[in-house]
Image 1 (cartoon, helix red, strand yellow):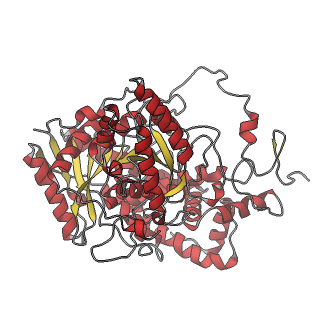
Image 2 (image 1 turned 30 degrees about the vertical axis):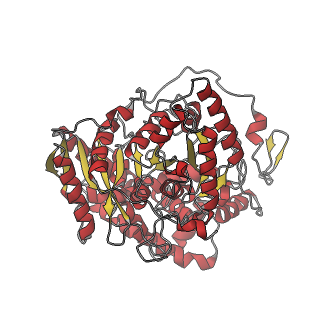
Image 3 (image 1 turned 60 degrees about the horizontal axis):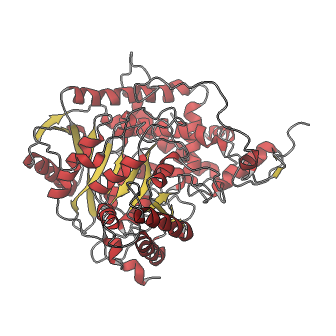
Length: 95
Length: 496
């Protein structure tokens, strides 16, 4: 399977990565090289094989449903590129 | 070069305990070595004040006859581990000036045991790479050079800064991480020892995530014993990582020197690649002979799905990465590039903040997870992963105690030599290591000799789940039998 330029644009948008027109052709080549490399997996007989979900056979751990952390709003916003008080500031999202 | 930087971690530990020198002196010697080695670009951030403060505390503890198992031992930390109050970048522009308000579990255990932090080590951006060339802060230069050549070589990756710093004797040991070979390949390229423990052995909490079902923390060290000393402190269950396994941590150092008589070592025929160099084949045969001479039984085995591991990895790892790296959106931390609306801001931030290899992997991951392709790519790759793991289970089921392979298909290559035209060329570096991550098993790389150019070559041992002790016993036999690894001449001190 290989991707065309429209698909490259669609993947870039789904990935939320801006691409310039002049990058598309090169990206298409690179993505197709990787897709060609993984193509051989189509030949593997996976009939009746379960897809792996956990590499170690273990039950996911559970804990009591209780508050274990909090009241650290200052720390949470400390690294934000733009903030006001304890809020992250973003461009307007609702018209 | 100060003789204190020539010690192994084990020697330094014993000498500190015997008060032959102070933790401060040991730390100062390494800080001076780091300063002189800036041309290698191994450290992204040096933290001398913190190091001296920690060394002072260690000296006080040692003075009182107290002290943990790593008391006063100076280490480097891969800049993928969050360190409280110290910038953590994952070698990416998108995390520029990020200062974590918390400490990763693994590093907090090192400090608990008395270790001293020298600084943060360079790596491939988000640990995606096999040569340390994808770092936003420039490549790391290996302390090794080919005989009679000044060409700058790569130290391997993604833990290239860790491997280079240990090989150049800038720190006694370093933390590293391994998703497809990122501990073992750079260890092999630099004549150091690196172990990727069993998945779940070390907590992943506070380590910047790449591919969560494959990522594991581990040490790179000067010899097998030092790796065992470090892993003991790094490992252990953690309530903050639900995939960390509730098992007590053995004293790995006690496994060193244990007899390997009668142990069954599997030699997988699928690792004998077409066109593999005679030197790699020779290294493998040497390893077989050393283990046989020590009483091990050598058995030919088959791991039939080996050749599918790398293609399956390049579906699973990018898929998980595309999901993990969705968090870098210019809102909560790191870089923000303004756009015409919120989506425009996301897209510009991520286009500018991520490097080429990272963008490429996010896009591949997004594609294989997208509607219509999920079953054909992602689910199929996870089924292949089940088959790869089953191969190993069959081998261990036949009584094999460990598996011996070469660690890499070649010695280190020059900066700029590989992968510029075709990304897959670089990916092939991990052909012997990636199966181990896919199956969640422990694997150790240990030096086995040098090639015709005088560059280190490494052997890999793969073990049963949670049998790191077996790997340490076997690796020590190889270390003892192999020709002593010469250390690179410190050419970098004269190029200031």
